[in-house]
Amino acid sequence: MAEILQKDGTWVFDGDALRLTPGRDKSVSLLRKTLGELVVPLGALAGVSFEQGKRTGRLRLRLRDGADPLLHATGGRLSEPHDPYQLTVESDRYGVAEYFVDEVRNALLLDRVPADPVADYLLPGPAVPVSVSAGDGTAGFDGEHIRLEWNWKTEDAKAAAGARILALTDVVAVEWQPAAGLENGHLRFTVRGAPTKAPPKYDPNSVELWGFKKDPLMVLVAAAVQARLPHPARAAAIDVRDARPEVPSLPVASAEDGHDALLRRLRELGELHRTGVLTDEEFTLAKQAILKRM
Image 1 (cartoon, helix red, strand yellow):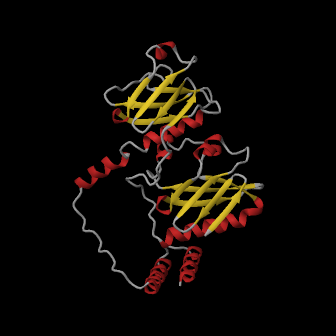
Image 2: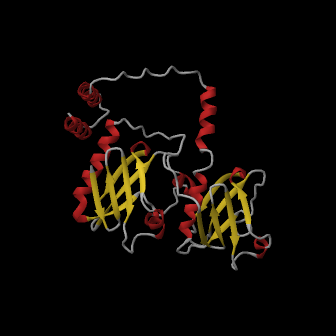
Image 3: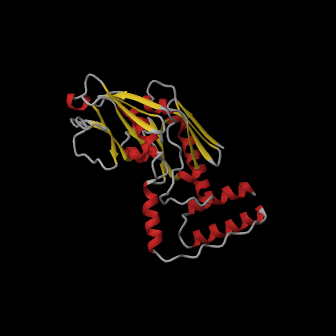
């Protein structure tokens, strides 16, 4: 097991999953604190890195495309303070961070976790019901219906129709866009059969965001809805599979003694190193991890 404790949060890796717990320090963003602890299965990871700085460094997790509804709903637009997959590391813990990275990388290599996209969400998304007030309205989601209510700052033309209730079955897409510079952000729901090009200020299926403290919390609603929509890659994957000739599946290896399996893995790693697929450092780290298991 590998563990790193910082004011910014605590990350623990047990070989199968990473448990990310936000810190209680005042510098930790409201979004991360509200999201709470996240459990990321090893199979959802595409990579991990550590970047050193003069005073602090940063651990970063890279998830496989399509694994997390939160990342899909935000389109990678979460800034560093709000990104739950980054951890600020104090300079006196750089060695611990590097050890943490080595342990996760070894596990990815030994378990042969691919880095390619997935066709199913591997994380559940925020729990429901969830409700957030920010910008010109309040967005709530109970797992089946989205409710949009307006406040005194809402444009009259949008508020005149009153509260808006959208059935999840009628929603085809959700998007969260943060405010940037002079451009306002939004939380927008695309409804089947009713596309609109209206700005969020006038769109009854959008909450306009102005860059205030609670704006990032709208991510919770966006991700909770996204997690319950059909995975965007599934339809495309089916189309591609139907269009290409059937490829015979690889035979499933029979059960074998654990010691023999580790010896076989050592031989495979040696071949990957010989052919240049693995660097000297990667080969050494992977070999050491196998020897520990033996």
